[in-house]
Length: 499
Image (cartoon, rainbow, N blue to C red; front, side):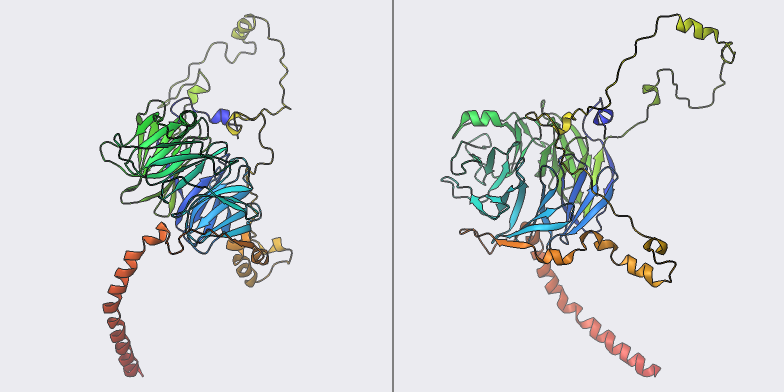
């Protein structure tokens, strides 16, 4: 993929709706890999669908969990995928094989999981009403010790290079801990609403480039901070946010917010409807509002790591937002003219002559330039895929997944032309072709993570929404049970009359 040819010289944010990705199941959450070539989607039936984002086709389907998948995270090289489900389990998957490496069981629901930006053997887990936990693949874990605040509604995230962990609680307090010593507090500050009143922190998101991060709070304001200023202020500091982003007209509560790939734009999804607000970080002005179908609720929003593309989830579908590409052929050839109707062509006198007189005049303008040697062997790294502290790209990164072709003709099996039964046998394994090695999945190592103070009676927010519907359904079921009995008697009378 040549990113230089895809670079647009205008605005660098999406403008129009560009189609949907239907995962058959109800989509809940999604995540791009580091290069943006693969998109993983977590579904309501526990499946993980991996899309090849360039071809917009399904590359692999993994039967990951029994319960809905609530959070996903890619490793740096893309070979591993981290998933969390509403049944308090966290699994690490081998993307190429579609097999589970290890499963971790927690006593309380998991709100978020995140791979370490540089170390693929470490990841961060945010249990419900419990401090964040730093996990290793071998099963060892370290709980991030909090200070005097007793609030346990905690969100956490790695910084851009994974050197620190930023945590925030419902009292508006943000704490920064170094990875080397999670008991040592490096910096802290409180998010206030202009007065001494604090506001609950809902999420913390870091930019892929630059030193900025977002703090989404319950007061409907998205604050942009710079990590260097936060570290300089130290403990109990008072860093000023670079920008304060909000919807002053509708007072929108934000469901999810994130940075663009270059860190110059910020997108936030409304919690009330399917609307995406895009701001420019440097100025803080609202540049675009993308409206989805009315009546839909937004579940997740992610920005493509490299291109101006946004993926949002609502009503079980993944909506893609991109720029409207208008073909302008005059940009490639300056003499080219686009015609609305046919025009008579005026030929030059010497155009169809054997010896073109005009051509001699052009050659007489000056000598030909010397031949320039073009180097076609050395491969320069794409700057969009390289961090500021790196020189070369990751050669082991997983960019695409091989897709096995489906056999439609019986001759391809090498058994000759057969009757109708073989096509039925071929159709059965197709949906589970990516996860055929079932005996290997039974050998998956399961580790029980012991968190002493974790609440075991909590229900995940995704499942807690269904409670009132279940109660109403139980009340309505009583009067509905009578009509079927009457219908059955009527059917018996009809049978007696018939016989």
